[in-house]
Image 1: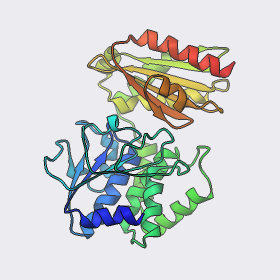
Image 2 (image 1 turned 90 degrees about the vertical axis):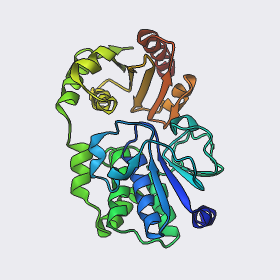
Image 3 (image 1 turned 120 degrees about the vertical axis):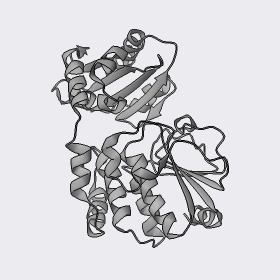
Image 4 (image 1 turned 120 degrees about the horizontal axis):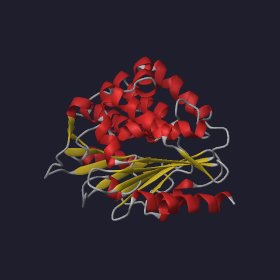
Length: 312
């Protein structure tokens, strides 16, 4: 912890990196650190390679400061919630502090701070701030709380414990905007997302005695609805609400022909290992991967075989 803040203290220009297609945990962590560095009067660039970031994150502090061009000159970079260097969206970033909570993190930083027991990366950052006696103000509290809520799925995952609620209570006392977090992350959906969700659920397939749910999203579906990548997640998660379903997979066809696989589970199957089969990673109950040169159907079938083997 001391080494992290020593490097921050010595750096003049610091780049904060939210991963590709950032969620509230990645951007919330970067937002909280941005606030702290502004208090230190550092020059800071808030970077994300994704051009169309989820508009539901606009409520988070400093969203308008997000830049998509990586600076040519900097002293230090810090990545948040990014399990592998490929998710940074930029190559050869050194020196780099890697702050994360994924069990599949490859340790790609020059300094790695990875706590796999943490429910979110914002919890890792929260622990860093608290242990270093750094005051958490209203903006930091809101950003940290957003990541906690998002990654715990509203305090409903298996990793949710007393520490999660203690963190939430502390951030509430610091002034976290709980209402805005809940509304933006749990209660907001665009019309495009609603239409895509209907199409996905209409075509959902159940296999292996209805223990596995399969959802496919084609480029045509995305174009017809006008939906964004993040709009696919709700239907995938809700497929686990079916009483017999234990594992769910969604394969999405991107505009450039590549495929994005998202895995969700409610049993003891380690999905990060299955994602690793395709070169991806993640958590035990939530993982993903990206592929090129493969058809949507072939990847679906291969994933079904891997799931069925785990369930046998």
